[in-house]
Image 1 (spheres, helix red, strand yellow):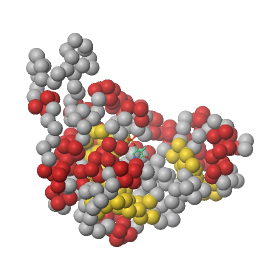
Image 2 (cartoon, rainbow, N blue to C red):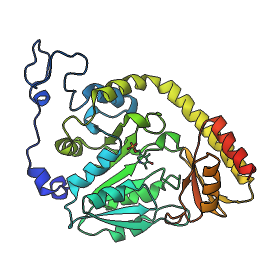
Image 3 (cartoon, rainbow, N blue to C red):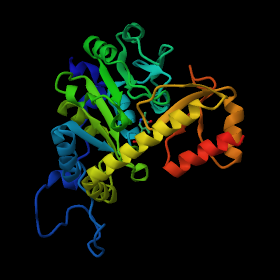
Image 4 (spheres, helix red, strand yellow):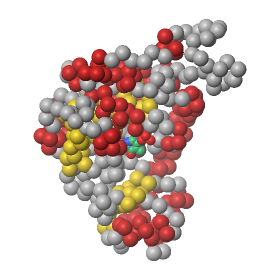
Length: 342
Ligand SMILES: *Cc1c(COP(=O)(O)O)cnc(C)c1O
């Protein structure tokens, strides 16, 4: 892979903004370099633009070096950045599986980059050759999501390897749900594939959707490009410090995941007993995709009773489907009792 050929020329050639915090690193007693107000305390200073303390801790947990990590305002930030770094608007294109997470297409369209969808098969698995066939010399990124949203399944590893081996551009694998999955993360493959970008998030298993922190893992060369284009202080100090503390809860997070997986088993079993549930798809995530006999009607009936699920009826290959997040034991029971009472 030739990184320079893949990157947009303007991005490759530009000089990034250099903040006061970039220019002086280290300890000093008097800081008069950033036009901050010294009279307030705690939050008056600009935060570390590259979040090294937090990355150091994440690096230990994930088993990757800090230079391989980018942190952003949710995963949505690196999704947007990877497009802005690599895709020339109106010239380059993106290939992605379909159905999948909606933000890839939204970010492509905001950036005026053509987005090519390749349907998954009836088992919601990918055909690597079909993806590769849709790619041409202007395809810069292939988006994969495993476990996939809204289908819930892990993508077939052999097919993903075929994509990684054969595609000369960037392959993004979104692992927002990897903590719930029965297979290992693609992080272990970063050193084998310089074109691989893995996305993870604190929004799901870590239970921190409100703090907005997403992670991208890739070669230091790709991470440097993300850092060049991002807002200088994209992760505020409240988030940096708070997540730093939350990372000490690894044992608790594991308990949460175990509880949610049991809840998933319960929902799978109970939903299967309902006459209007036609099919429950296998899931490796903290949600279940279920095909029902009248998705719109059932969605409405549940909503009228205060139970909100996601109606995926109009999504490719998901006609008739509702996506149900695993809740607390109590919430799961309310859902099932409500369905039984219809
Ligand atoms: C929920 C989700 C995310 C998380 O996005 P954040 O911006 O980190 O909250 C990313 N990708 C997929 C596929 C998701 O379902």
